[in-house]
Image (cartoon, rainbow, N blue to C red):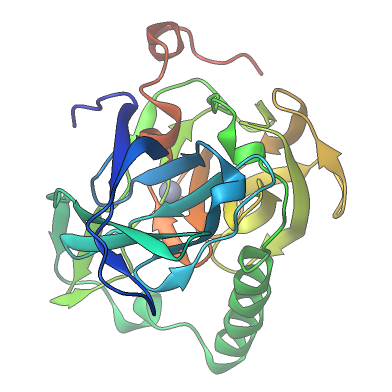
Length: 293
Ligand SMILES: [Zn+2]
């Protein structure tokens, strides 16, 4: 997939409607908000209000977004997000800017596999309970809505290596579609150091979840988080603040992994984002130079 790096849009405020006031056709001759990111399924959009004092509220698809003191906000599009979205900026004078957002749909790699035994497909009852509990703790960590704005940094790859799995791909076993793959897989020998792609706070660490094995979640603020799975071990503690580039974990093949690799996922709350759209294509050096153990 061709990745276009950050595209910037500036919303020139054209007043559309006035809440609870007489209809106004006033044109606000200023740029109220700028947006960067990609309008595509899996994309993360980072917004910045030109003058935060003039902005009362920012709503994306009727969800109110957290607005930082500096005017930063964020939202994103899931794997199967619809094409049409709406960003509404309510100004202090009660006028509204409505920005219609149309996103590009993607085609994902679908792999059909027949003849899988039922045993492999269906975990036992006790494992199901375990899986449910683990999913709940991951979900809870991803609900974190912190005021930090670490997500405004330029993200860096947590590990360089061969990309062996991509966002959105899906396997269909015996005609039954399985959960899509939401991360980007980077192959590396067990024990390879993983660094933090941006500043963050550790919100979850579990040494061995059923599917994801060693699992670490870093919160970057405003619901944006990174999840690292199949780890050999985490090297940071829950509640710890980490800086971009700091070593946070080692790669492994724990959980249901076919071989040693890092699976890096990104979320906006429960919305799955494509980390590659956030970080950009991997520096070419990473493709040739296999990471050292
Ligand atoms: Zn993976």
